[in-house]
Amino acid sequence: MKRPIEDGAPAGQGAVAIEAGTSSDGLPQLRQKIAELAAQASNSNIMFDSLYKEVAGRIRIARSAPLLSEQWVVAQMHLSRLEQARYPSNYALAALDTLYADRSQAIAAGEAEDGVAEIKNAIVRAQNIVSDQQLKIDALRAGLQQP
Image (tube, rainbow, N blue to C red; front, side, top):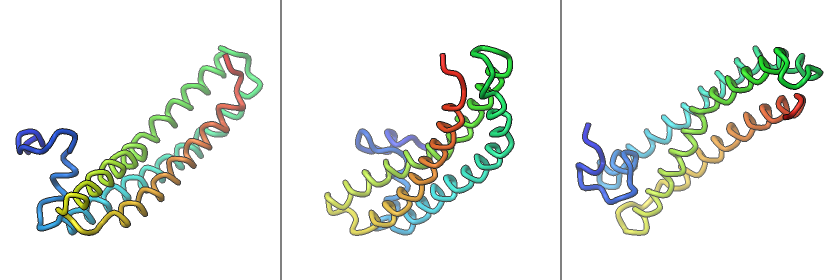
């Protein structure tokens, strides 16, 4: 697959913009990309919740653990695992934001007519997932001794 720059795409437009513009206004491809990113955020959330259930109790046990003790370090490692588990949903949200910006530019340039409302809806759903994940991590972290 060619990189966007090899196809002469304007600076700042990524592969998402090129994929979305392969038909007359790219609406079918855009809808497919939105669905893929929404599914990525949703599937990531399922995996995050599974991991959260696995490690939250272990992290809570370390609440009274002294700073830098073995229990505290293990709890930090579990928090790191949760942070890593958030990456796919954060990536999906960022990709949706980029898709929104690219589509808005295409509409402003008269190259497309629709699609931003669908992207916005997917962004809201992804933002809710990302926010919920962050709240869960923050609550666990707040219960531990802080350096």
